[in-house]
Amino acid sequence: MRYPRVMDGAWWQLITSQFMHHDAPHLWFNIAGVWIAWLLFPEQLKTPHNWIVIVPILLSSSIIELFGAPTYEVYAGFSGTLYGVFAYAALKDTLNRNWIGGVVFAALVIKILMDWDQPETGDAIAVFAHVGGAIGAVSLVFAEKLALKRNTK
Image (cartoon, rainbow, N blue to C red; front, side, top):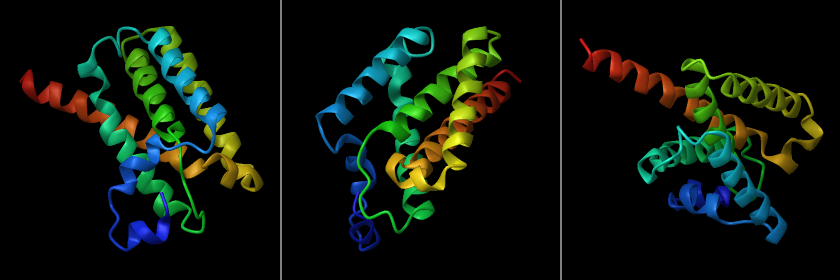
């Protein structure tokens, strides 16, 4: 995602930037992250329908990266969305009283806080994209709970 272009109307880069990578190891780390999420949270991510949450998480990650770090010239990668997928599945597990979700969610929050506290590495790891993915995911979990509560009344 190239910030000046997005601001000039190339809105599709909010989506396509998540599927671009800086190099092969970057791509493979993200693929490994998807695989680990699927292994850790089989109940939350077992069908293709469960993976539809990637779309709003992806957009949240890109938008918050765009406005949170406007001087960061280029953003590419899926890590913000991965943080969101982990946050989404872990929080749902936590609310369903599965301990692994609580551990992963706590670790994710600690990792984000550590990244936030290290501004000199912030550009290298796209802290705002990670925060955006996590915020989008937490918002989705609570929106789903609210919708479920309204439907059961």
